[in-house]
Length: 97
Image 1: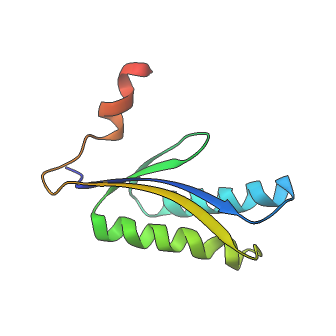
Image 2: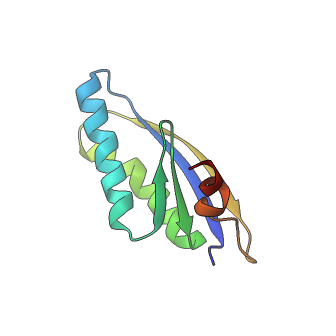
């Protein structure tokens, strides 16, 4: 059971498309490395897990672009937290596959 679901869109302040995509790819690779269940979509990545773990993931997703040369970065983050559990990515999307 997951208690929290987040959706995060990371927006590094980089104008060159190739560099922008490389930075976003690095952020997604980091998310994949966390072991949390996630799904990439065109505008954001959804991640499920423990609230405290996901908050740390959000923080790290802000640090990575800076480390890779972006002068600054922005993010749009949605958080749904329910100690009794949240609907999973699969429960929300499998009927559309």
